[in-house]
Length: 636
Ligand code: COA
Ligand code: AMP
Image (cartoon, rainbow, N blue to C red; front, side, top):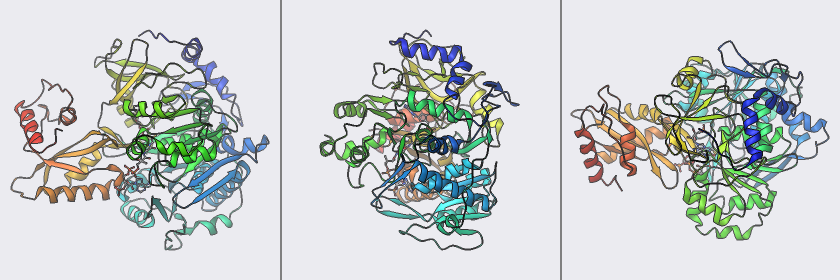
C-alpha cells in the first residue's frame, strides 16, 4: 500500500531507514560508546536470523552509566526513587548509581556469576533492582526479571527455563498499604522448580524481614558491603543482555532474548526520536521493571540517553489519591511521561473531572505517551481535554523492545487520530496481510506483520527454543514477523491496532495467556473442559472469564465452583490475572476438528458482531450458548 504522509521530514527519515538500513543504523550506532566499533552492520547468524553490529564489542552498563561519568555528568541525577508506599524520595547521581552497580556486580562475581550466566531478579520497584540489572550487564551475565505479581508456579516455570545461578530477591513488595512477603513465594517456587539456584541474595526491607537460611541465602546488605567494585566486561553486540518471559498462546511462557548492541543503539535512538528527550531531561515511565516497559524505559533507555529516570513504587490511585501521578510530574519536573491507558482509566474513575490536577504545576510536561494496550477513545479524549500537551499512542511489544509505531515527537509531530498509533517508526517495514498473505487495502483489517530484517533491538530468538521462535513468529507468513496483533491502515497509512488475533489477552496492561488460565481451570476435578476468553472491561481493558463444562455426574454448586476456580488461578498464575467470573454451559462451540471457537464466544459476550465459521461442528450450539449467557445476565 502507498503511504501518503503529511510530513516530509518523517517521510524522509522513514524511507531512508528502509532503503538504506545499514547506513541509517550505523549512524545511530555512532552515538553510543563501543569498545570495538562494528564494521559489519547487518548480517545473518547461523539460524538465518538478521543480526545487527555482529562484530561490535561493548557493554550496556558502560553505555548506561560509565560513559556519562567519564563525560563529566557524574553529578547529574540518574535515578529518582519515588515511593509513596514507603514515604521515600531518594536521588542517585550517575556517579552514585555507578558506584552501587559496580559493587553489586562485584558481589555477583564473588558468588561465582560470570559472563553468560543467568541471574533471576524477583524484586519490587526499589533502586537496588535497577542497579542489579545493570550489575548483571556489567559482568556480561544475563538477567531475567520476574514481575512480583506472579505466583510461585509461574516463577518456578521461569526458574526451570532460565536455570539461574543466583536469584536476587527482596523480602517484600508493597501493594498500596498491603505488605506482600516475597520469601514464601520464592521458596515455594524453588521447591516446585527442578533447577535449584546456588544462592538467593535477599534484600531485607523493614516492612517484612525474611528469615535467611545459610549457606543458600545471603543477606544483601552484608553481601554488598563486603564486595569490591568491578569494571565492565566486554561483550559482543549479539550476546544476550536479558531474557524476559512473556505470555504466548500456550501455557508455557516464552523467553524473549534481547541482545546488547542493537538494543543500546535502538533505545538510545528512541529516546530522542520517539520521546523527544536527551541529556539532562527528566523522563518517567510509570510501569514496573518486571515488564518490557520497565526494562526499556525505566532502566536502559533513559540511562543510555543521559536522562534522569524515575522509579515509582506506587499506583495511580490510592497512593494516596488519583492525583499521585500529577504530584510526581510536578515534583520532579518531568518532560516526557509514558504510562498504560489502564492507569488513566483508574484515575478517571476516581476523579472524573481531573480536579486534582489543579493542585499541581505540570508545566514541565511536553509529551504524554501511552502504550501497553489499545488507547480507548474515551481515555484519549479525557487526556486531550485535561492535558495541554500532545497525547501520543504508540504500539510495541516485549519482542520488539521499542515502538513499532509512534508519532515521532523527536522527528516531527504529525496530526494524531483517535484510536491510531500513527505511523511505523523508522526501521519497521509494516504490512497488513489477509489470510492468503496478500496485502489488504485501506481500512481493511488483517494480520499486522513486519518484513525482515527487523530493526535493532528486535529479539533474535526464544531462549533455548529457537524452533518456537520460527514456529510462532515466522512460519505463517515466511519472511514476515507475525506480531500477533490485527488491525488496519487508513487511507493515510495510519495504523490502527485492534487487538490480538491469538489467545493472548491484555489485562490492565499485563500480557497474559488464556491458555495458561485454561490449564489451571481444567485441573479442577469437577471440570471436563473449559474455554477462557478475554472480554472487554471498562477499567482493566480486558478481563478473562471462564466457560465451563462439568464432568458427567458432578453436581457442584456453581457459586462455590467459581470461588474455587478464582482462588486456583490466583495461586497458580497470580492476582494480576484478574480472573473473577466463570459460568457453567451445556456445550462449547467448536470446529469439526475440535477447536473451540473462542473468538465467537468473546464477540458474543462483548456484544460485537460475529461470524460463525462454516467449519463449525454443530451450529445449534451457538444459539444454545447465547441463550445460556443471556439467561445468566452475561450479555449486558
Ligand atoms: N505484586 C503483588 N501483587 C500485585 C502486584 C505486584 N507487583 N501488582 C499487582 N498486584 C495485585 C494487586 O494488588 C491486585 O490484587 P487484589 O486482587 O488482591 O486486589 C491484583 O494484583 C490485580 O492488580 P491490577 O489489575 O494491576 O490492579 P491494581 O489496582 O493493583 O493496579 C494499575 C492498577 C492500573 C495501577 C496497574 O494495573 C498498572 O500499573 N497497570 C499497567 C501495567 C503496565 O505498566 N504494563 C506495561 C505496559 S505500559
Ligand atoms: P507486551 O509484550 O506486554 O508489551 O504486550 C504487547 C501487546 O500489547 C501487543 O501485542 C498489543 O496487543 C498490546 N499493545 C501494546 N501497545 C499497544 C497500543 N498502543 N495499542 C494497541 N495495543 C497495544
